[in-house]
Image 1 (cartoon, rainbow, N blue to C red):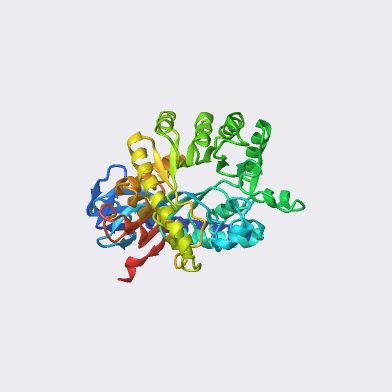
Image 2 (image 1 turned 90 degrees about the vertical axis):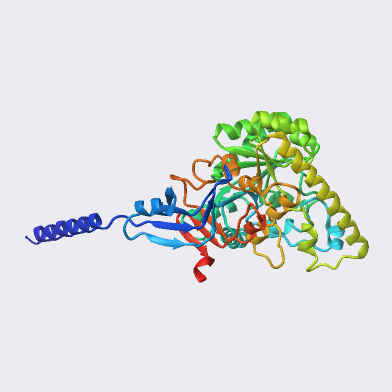
Length: 456
């Protein structure tokens, strides 16, 4: 009798709950803004509204049209005259690296490779410390409008994959992360002459060193064991250590696992090896030739531009803490001038070539007075200083970046069915690209991360 009474009460409870659910339509969020910019076309919708349900965009259009489709009780966010944009994508970053550049004397005394002494310090720190740093830097990137990032190494064995999983589980705040795990490279490509008693253990924390076809395949599999999203390979400028057969094996093993592969390649020989092997993107590519750009275009290989050290960046991050002798300062100024000319030439040749290009901050450096996100956003004026039009810059960090990542069906534009990843700025980024350094509204997956407009 008692059991029957309990069952009756339970049935009544379920009936009432179902009736209440039927009477209360699913809530959503309606965002209104003065303008919405579509990076694909450059078209402006003004005024604009976006309806969001269950973390995805349901409808986009004029406010009167979209509001009519909104469920009763939908939350309304009015951004006034702001410009809405898709969430920004940083396709080349380092979330677990925050290098403080040492004085020149320290470089001269300790130098034994591109990674020493500054970045080597990150390897010898504990994985736990790096993970907590990564969580902070990820949050700072998100608050600056980067709702998706591709982390290409310098995260320990699985630091970026673990951070990605923590973000996805809601344990920490951060952008969507594509993790690369350890860089695949040749022995001696970054660090040389370490203490022989410790060298192998130190290197293993950050790199997978290869010199043969079989080692290349095994390195890919070792990263896949930690559930990475993308494989990153660093090629020596002269193609030493990883030649075309080794690189081809790495690409084949990566594609067999249905993953994409990004190749750090700066010198022409390294770029050619990456092209011949059929990588998905070439990172940096500073010394690319016009013929190589054409090959990349014809083979569908993306160019991922990294304008990190353009526009005098090195001096900006070092001058607050390092006093340079006049001779060194003059050398650095001359190097900045040469780099500016190189950047302007590179950008024009890329634009003329027709190759698909994205842009990544390559940010792993401590910038005094700026958060990680603010430091990452310096790539926008750097690209513009080199002659890239604002619309091309926007496409490089939205639509084309999404395509390079293979996520064009999820992110990169504001349209129905995609993740509700949105940012807003006060002005017009097509007239002033530095607006992207002042993102005032950030939404990821339908959840508001930041809304500075609400305070006014």
